[in-house]
Length: 324
Image (cartoon, rainbow, N blue to C red; front, side, top):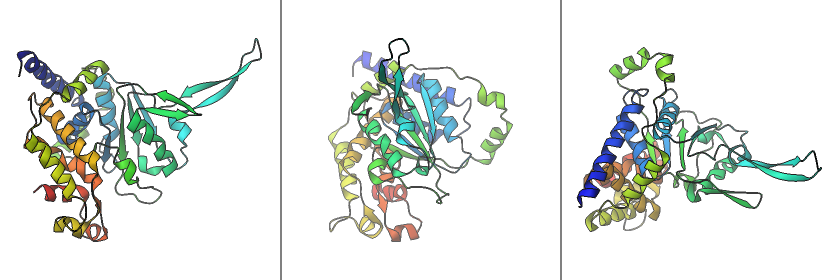
């Protein structure tokens, strides 16, 4: 490793810690969730947050956007939300002087560097699918024209796990677009006392940008330079392939899984492991990095069957068991 690259890695670690500190001005605890979000961000991926209301999921995403210097947009997903409400639409305008009429495209909230899709499972599949092309390709097609969303572009969505009435579960194809699914849990008693002591002024105070969008793009490019040996690559691929039900699958998979992870999961596992190593200032990813990202990267890609659901198992739990 050259001294120049070592210096770059050290600067990355410094910048990551600066963002943690900035977000910590508003968010109490939740270190693993914050690190998961930042890992997802520097990996160039999208993230899904699952947790009950009141756990500051929306505040966390908006705070990271503010600390990263990214333009931020929020959409509250509802049953009557239409694709045009997210993507934008063309309107017919008439020029007063000439009487000429023409269409003008009005951009929707998706044209932001970070989009928060709040309670994404509350809107019908037609509107959920409107995000598919944006998340995968970084552009949208409207009225036969393609519009580039630019870079960086990230979608972070929230989902409430306890309310089922009036919700539309995300299809597997859209779940697969999310690099990570992060579980947001209740804070400890000490952390909850700190949260209760926060004033509205504390929550509203600006935290200031510690990065810029260009700096984020530099870090995303650096992820590719983090070394990964053949042992780690083989382990990631073997783990993903073992999650697919079949005659040669582990008994755990045959008993509890209806569907396993696809090839995209192997690539995302390796990229997330690289990002985690880079965030710590290390030039190479190791097996500890892979183990750390497995539940978040694989959990939502493992579709549990009826028996697994009846026993209270989740994809993340089964991913950890497969890893063991």
